[in-house]
Length: 250
Ligand code: 1GP
Image 1 (cartoon, helix red, strand yellow):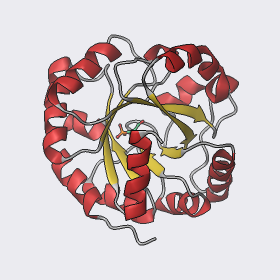
Image 2 (cartoon, helix red, strand yellow):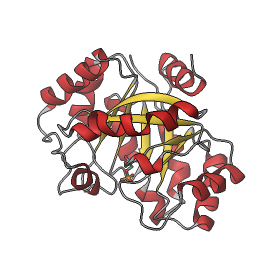
Image 3 (cartoon, protein in one colour):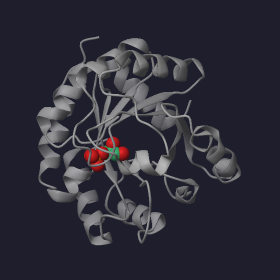
């Protein structure tokens, strides 16, 4: 079994929650990426995700190099499109956008990127990606041309996650969208967690330690935060510590 995924499973088995930082190469300068990577190492961040719904001037390659210069945390690609597949990372969340009905995001982009991914040393982690309505139209919803799951429809979220697991996906990612007004509702997190046996990632709009804690207590195994650190890097320490301090009850 692969190393990063095995580590995730081991954490879940122990009842430990883990913390991931999302780096958007477009939104941070290389100096900021280096500073963030240094902090992440010091705070004990578990994973660094790199990617964006759209890249206009940032470089995946230079961003990953900058991260790796300053920390030894596993770097996972979180690609918004096939152009963001880069062999310098350690692994890739091979995202199938199962909450939507856009065939390109479900399988088309995977067909295009398959030879590149296969030829790389990237650890491939098949991930069900589920967008959840979060107050207004998000970049990821617009760019993926998919409708997010309505906030109150926990049963749709649960059934979608169940189907994804039965199709063989290894991780489930509940996503409100980067910079979302509202994070994924805890009741939806709970409904999804109770419906699946694979690890659950939750991200989008998590801006405080309290919000991260609420997601963990509802059943999230991995918390992802990006936007908040672009504004205030000093939040990282308390958010990471809070997530690590939550003990799973199941
Ligand atoms: C977005 O879930 C991630 O894909 C993180 O969202 O940037 O809002 O923290 P934020």
